[in-house]
Image (tube, rainbow, N blue to C red; front, side, top):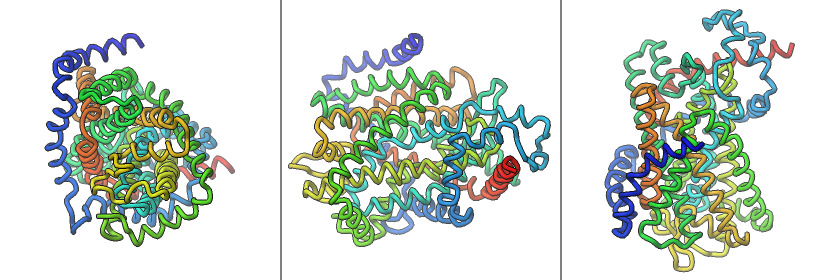
Length: 533
């Protein structure tokens, strides 16, 4: 632990010297001013519209999720129970010993070597799920939901839920492929994700050049996503609640909070996927349970308003009245955008974490992965939304706000996690402390998971050497500080763009390779039947 801390401090020492000279010059503002033009430009490129108010990338996500749901016969519903059983370890014997694997020879495996091959992987199903969930369950669930409601009103919640349910099918497809086409190094280290199923999978189909191009594009966008949505957006929201809790008014407060977060995150990420998994398997369930219990307390304390809140969410989904949202299409897009940012279904990022699982049946981990959007969006995002909607029955702010995600409560501007914090404060004494802890834990867990995603993409582009790894980690830690210092608007614009940019190359792989997923699903189910006979 000591050597990790010393390494991070060595990396950040030049920043501390710089901060000492610039803290009195409004360093937060200077960072924001430098970052905003770049953020705006990237956003305009990624979210190009096919018609007014309808970015192509959102339409692509929605239609693809519908297609995969129909093609696989509603796996989000039919296989929900099996997914839970896989996480529980019910089929561990089958996975470890290849029981009933009649298709092994067809897949190029020699039956006598199946037992040895089954040891590929570094983490358990539960650890892979916890790592991936920690990458999706983050401040998108607290700040992102508040942003969606502030912009699109209560109706945005309905479309977030629909997006979460459909996204379960997309997540199943991409995470099955992540395991199917992963690389395993000589030391047992696993390398997986869209970079590998694009390059290897498309080559199998006779499109090797296309596979290489899309794999490189994905890796570039994923690195950007790790710096943005998986990092800067998280430290940004953690900083907002910390500054509010401690009433920090200094122009350099965000910078210094960012430095502290960078040290904390750096100590963890230097340890690699096993250290990340060991942290996330403990932190993620704990923080999720704590947050859910707090939401349930508020919901049940106002149980008489729950049916009114649900009715408002449904009615506003089809007849939105939020200022500036415009129409059904407008509120639908707000809901889908925020849900897709939160659960990342279609972006392909989670398949990087899932590819490290110990299994010889790729579809088993695909089933585990479909639980992610359900936990993230259908459960946690919905609870946050109910808390905010119930809170605003008191008429504290106008839906639509200023049109950029901020609202005014008692004449004071609030945005993102600040809105959720006000809602919690209405019902739970000292909730400011609790929510600050929750936001910081969500932020840190998301950052450490995304550091792994980005590093795997970095390795794909620049090799697997220690120097390349350290360069990436230094850049990653710098973006922790940038996110803490810059404004929410510029950070979230950049973060949205980077997360959604990953969709374009990833979808190429999913559409070429979804028949492989169907074959692997049958292979796993055949093994279960043989094992139970």
